Length: 245
Ligand code: ADP
Ligand code: MG
Image (cartoon, rainbow, N blue to C red; front, side):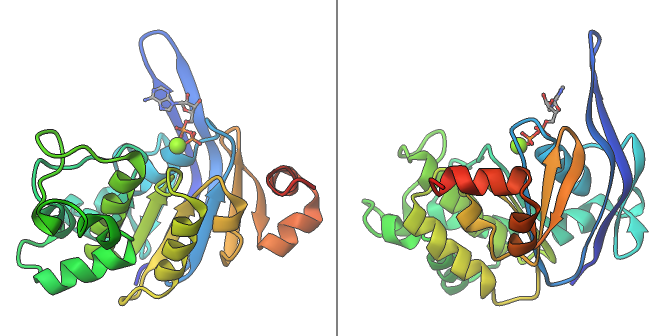
C-alpha cells in the first residue's frame, strides 16, 4: 500500500499562444488504503492532478510523492505499476475482452481475469456476445457502448492490482444501478489499495473517507460527505441540484 501526497503542486499548460494555470498550490495527502473522491466542475483541474500522479506530466511547481519519494525519482515502470489510472478516454486494444482485461499480466489466469470482469460488471454483457470473453473488441472488433468500454477499462485497472487506483470519470456512462454495484465492488477489492474516484454523481462519492472539491485549480473544500453538506458550499449545491432539493 502506498501513501500519496501532493505538496504545493502547481501545473501550467503552456502552448505557443497561451498559458493555462490548471493547478494552483494544491496540497493533499492520500493515506494508504483509504477511499478518496475528487469532485469539481469541468475544467477545475481533476484530470490534470491525476496526470501528475502517474507522471503523464511533471508538476511545474511543488512535488508529488509516493511513499515519501518524489515521483520524478521513481522508475517510471515501477510508478506505473503502483499507480493504476482508468481515464475518461477508454483505450481498447484490438484483442479479446479477456486479453484487454489481463493486459497488465500476460500470465494472468482466466479465472482471475473473469473474477475482475465480474467485479467491473463486464461479465453480464461479455457472456451475451458471440464468442463470450473471446470476442474481439477495439478498433477491429465489435462495437461497444461507452458504458461497456468503461467497464472493461475498470476491470483492466483493477486486475493490475495497483497500490493506488485512480478512476477518472470512469463511471460517468454507467447507469445508476451498475455504478452502485461497482462502488460496492471497489470497497471489497481482493488486494490493499488506495482509491481515488473522480465522479460527478454525489451518490458515487458520498461514502469516501475524504472528498476534495476542486475549483479553478484549487482545493476549495475538503471533508466527509456530512462535513461538506454542512459547509453549504459547492458540494452542498451540487448535492441539492442532484437531489431536487
Ligand atoms: P477537469 O478534469 O476537472 O475537467 P482538467 O484538468 O482537464 O479539468 O483541465 C484543467 C484546465 O486545464 C482547464 O482549463 C483545461 O482547459 C486546461 N487543459 C487541460 N488539458 C490541457 C491541455 N492539454 N492543454 C492546454 N490546456 C489544458
Ligand atoms: Mg477531467
